[in-house]
Length: 314
Image 1: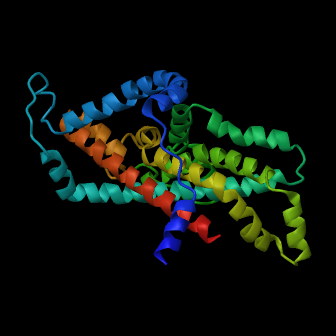
Image 2: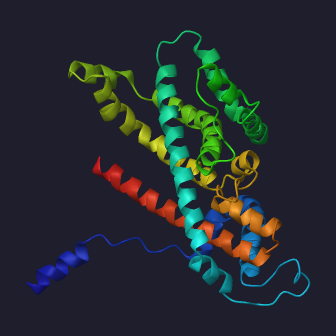
Image 3: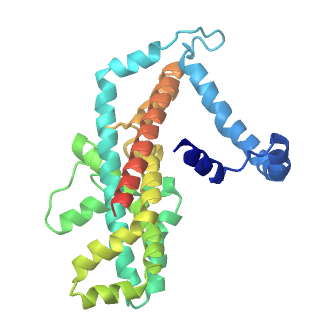
């Protein structure tokens, strides 16, 4: 029995021997040389600022200690995680991100399905719907801020024409939060629309014909054909959209002037900006930015893992 097992073991194919390190270097050396400049640039523009930011976060750097900062360890991190304000702002940031990304995806898919059908002047509608995305963000944000003016803004004037009372966009905490959400939805849905439209055009029409033969209606086709086949292109777009929205300083800062009224509409990134450039608490702001990075990193890893599990289930 042992002789037979030994014979089988000896006749089994052996794994190839590992290549010597010098042979591997000669084989992949040109590729390493080609990517070396890009790696050095990324190390300089991403790696160095990140390390420097972390170094600031463990110091008491501020406007008064700018010349001689001292090491304080994790004091800023403990202060951030024990402050009730952090969790209030974090909850508003999550709500801000969920509302915007959900509206971006829903509007983007809806408009992409309409434009993918037999619509007259389809090219004109595509160009018009991409305009909000093509315009500079700060111009759009300031335009919406003017439209939300209580006395002279276009939004309240239109509401008055239809018999509705004017909305206190910047004096009410709730409406002051809704105002930048509306502006950011206007800015962000064209990106998702373009991504979804590209994915829809890659779906074979034969699948819809087969679904129609099986008796599937429009909703069933959307659920069983369109959305599963759009998932590979929508998942990275949603991840990018979430990161951009989570860190979107421009719209909140320009529309509500960074937390109007009474600092009640802050999200995490505007809170950090104000701590750094209004109160000059550079060490505290650097620690806060590291916390934001860790939150986004955790979300990204969790979302990608969940998406892979969902794809495996299909």
